[in-house]
Length: 165
Image 1 (tube, helix red, strand yellow):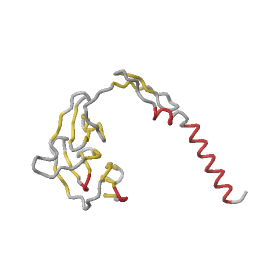
Image 2 (tube, rainbow, N blue to C red):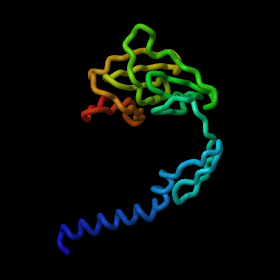
Image 3 (cartoon, helix red, strand yellow):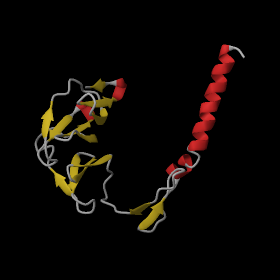
Image 4 (cartoon, one colour):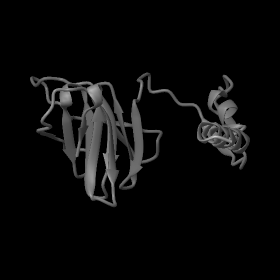
């Protein structure tokens, strides 16, 4: 076999292996919960079982994490915290009279939360309740933030391929 043909065979083998290993994954991701308030969901070939309870805040959370013994969620222009995922407390991130930004993502480093959003906005908090706006060096929409423990840095990514470290 020539080199190109070998590359295609290897690629095809990888795709087949992924399909066989994750055969249930595509189906599981598209599975919708029934209209009832509780249900069970078993993703992928391991068939782990999760019991879900449907709750609605009437808001669309764009990100949610569990950190520092609480949930922290971003929702539109707000941050919410909850000790149990049932009772939610709206936190003041953007005080009245200041520019209000749409928030997208939240991360936790072990000592600090970071929230990012449109116009390059970055807010930090040690506890999920007290927030401080930071300089971000960009006005591009930031869509995601993660904490990378191995390099001890937050990394934010956004529109136009922007990456902040």
